[in-house]
Length: 518
Image (cartoon, rainbow, N blue to C red; front, side, top):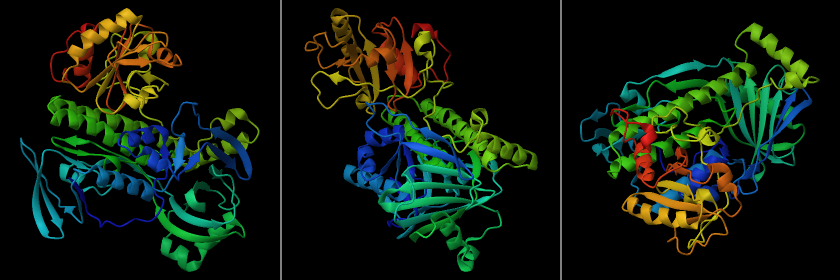
């Protein structure tokens, strides 16, 4: 059940507009990554300027086998439309508009009781678990008795969406330090689909939107950037940015995610992207618990993993904001010196921070990521998003890359030494994995006959799987969210089920067994 306090109408404004490639992969696992990408702008590069001088250009890496671009620019309103349409197509989801959860949740051993105000009045609802995705003013977080920790920034940012008549500049990210059209402060320009641009102006804290409009200052600011180009104002908003993380993401059967759990500046596109990663992380764990495949102890790893991710995002965006908006006169002097030197000095240029863009978090310290048993060559990948690679699955033409296998449960990949060993693993493991949500596959070279491997053969068409996942004889466990949970060198078939159990939280709250024996 989804409870939404608002009405079913389209919001306006770009809001969170950069969606990162791995987040598009998450959305594609529920059937709408490509739908969101259609009509979006692919962003391949970002440019950083000081005054009128281009300091550097950053290219966002893309592999020839990547399905999605590094980033797409698409208004958050469109993202919400695509997600809602997919929910409605999927069915089985009870969406209740105009239903506002009231403060005060009652939890017991069986579930949670909520009081909800809706079109028909006040009613009481029961749920096994509650997830609050209700933003900065989260009623759910407050009902948990959980506050934010962190800081707010002194200056404000004036954000406008404009439809332009005529070209402005290349359809890429453009960040300006101390430009002539906003001296002493910053401006960020980002293109959107349909000839719309978003402009973020850093402005003094005392700036008020009503007076900007009434005095004509808003139009004056815009015209300084656009020159004599005509424009139509689509949306305007004034923000004070915050760097805040909730002290807890879980209390019993109640959770928070997204802005309800963390707030950060948008310079780096880490807000919505990390919020979607929150949702996927919690979703697969709730699924395992509700389907009886894991104990409730697994749910405690949501806070462990995602709060660590939020703190990392806060650390990165705080560093960016300290450079953009130095909090002390001394830091401002130092920042300005770096910018002036950066015009001629590559060393100084490397210190310029206009926003490090989002990348998925690696769960290095997770209690359900097993570090024992992996060779040194693959240890650095543990807890990270599983590398993709081209492949074929015998008998399944829909699979053309490794990530096509992710999303419906755990995936076990064994790199077979030869055809005989591949057949042995398939015979043995099919019994081990029977009745479980585990997809097992042996990875074989193109010269091995896959016909007799009973649909369990992943053919390494380009040799990329072996490069990424270690030598032959290695077993890798991929979680439903695509992160690597365990890697076992010199593996045996019985390791598969034990490793999946470990990654599902079987060892949580129990005496630690010898992990080398898993």
